[in-house]
Amino acid sequence: MKKQNILKGSIILMISAVVAKGFGALFKIPLTNLLGGVGMSYFSCAYSLFLPVYALTATGLSSAVARMTAQSSAIGMYANIRRIRSTALLLFTGVGLLGSVAVFMLAYPFSLLSTGGAEAVPALMMIAPAVLFGCITAVERGCYEGMSNMYPTALSQAAEGAVKVAAGLWLCSFVNSHGSAVMANFPSVTDTRALSAAAGILGVSLSSLGAVMFFAVMALFRRPLRGGEEHIQSRREIARELALTALPVGVSSVVTNLTSLVDMWTVIACISRFGCGRGVPATVAPEDVPNFVYGSFAGIALTVFNLVPSVTNMLGKGALPTITAAWSSRDRAALEAGTSQALVTAAAIAVPSAFGLGVLAPEVLHLLFPLQSDEAELCISTLRLLMAGMVCLCLSFPVFSLLQAVGKPSAPLKIMLVGTAVKLAGNLALVPLIGADGAAISTSLCYAVILAVSLTVYVRVTGTVLPVGALLKVLYAGAMCGGAVYLSEGICTRAGASGLIGTAVSVTAGAVMYLVSLGLLSLKRPKRQALRDT
Image 1 (cartoon, rainbow, N blue to C red):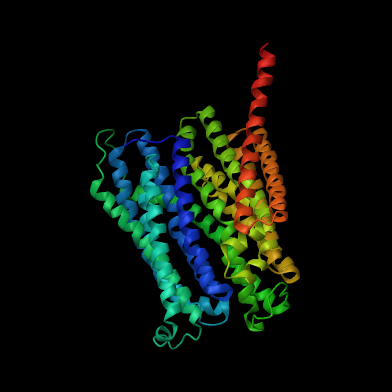
Image 2 (image 1 turned 180 degrees about the vertical axis):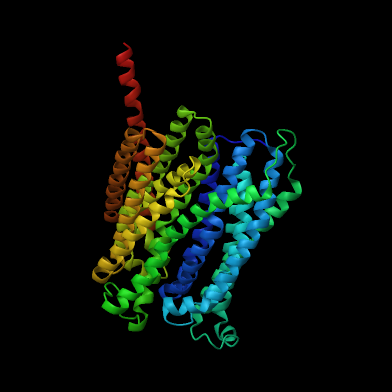
């Protein structure tokens, strides 16, 4: 099996993440236009329960299997790799089944607690099977990633995204078009938007099943690894190591996803009690205002916010096998090179994206959500306030993977607990005053604290020198990118260019300025070195 180095593996995963997010945008944006703010609140409610359960059962699993596989591969224990895969599949299929049952059983009480009614119950039930399918997929992806082969993960993500778009949008459109007929089969549901949200969620479950089917086909063509060290761990040893590695990461991911629960409960509750319906159009019924604001924030602002972090998250996956090997062999040069590569690459993607989205927030939101102009208008300032947090989150993902690679899988849990406390306090203090903007500010503060603490812990454990100079260059180039976007957007507006053309011109100008700035900054160091040599 041909392995990829950290850069090639990360690039493969980032391209796959871009493709997956492209499919995600093709799914989420039309879905938001179909459901509106209130319908998206039901959709987001289902995700708010699904994500913590999925995080606990599956999120840490892929990294745990990858780490154990990488360790066995490094010393040629190929028979042990086969044992790791079979044990993980057996163990976590059972765990995934329990997770799916838990989501299904909690659907009604969770809906009552979150929305005050049963409208979100169908969506919660439809997403339950995705936990089981996600666990199976996580094991398969982890096995390939541990062998430094990122193609299966990339291809499975593309397959998953394609199924989600095709099935989710078709099902949601069908329910919208045949609302009365479908409603007749669900007498306890009084809102057609609740069934439309459930239909869209069903597409998510079917997409996770599509990923499982992809790996089933892959298994038919997989050649077993032969030769090498024949020592094999017992299944009990493997299960214990998997649990000790995956559980802290899973719990950390649960805490990460608690921020979505914090938003759902605090935004809806605070606006229900204190009002703060700023920016809410008069056409929205008073009783729908809390769900309208939360649905707009979660369905629009956070959807755009999460686009870039989902790409940089792949940097951690690509770096994990290499950093694990460097840490195990005490190769300090490789450790620092891998750390610098992961952080600088994440920043190089996140920083210009943040400046560009911040400047073009009105144009981007109205372009993406043309049928939900009221919801998009509400989220303009919210999206801008989220941009600092987006950069911090983009850098935090790779650092969490690096901490796991150097044997500190429980550190992200403690760090995320601190960040969640900041998020909760910020929401309670700010949402009653400024609504969704308050949730955006607390989100940025939350991820800023998380990044600062995680970097401090990583440096303390490894003694690695952070690439501060390179990160400052990226920040400067990003600021130049934002300035170019701002000036170009103003020129296009005065020239009467359409929204799409103006946005395209502004993005192009910003990208050119960013690349030129980075190029000029990268040329300075060799010139100074040449003078010293002279």
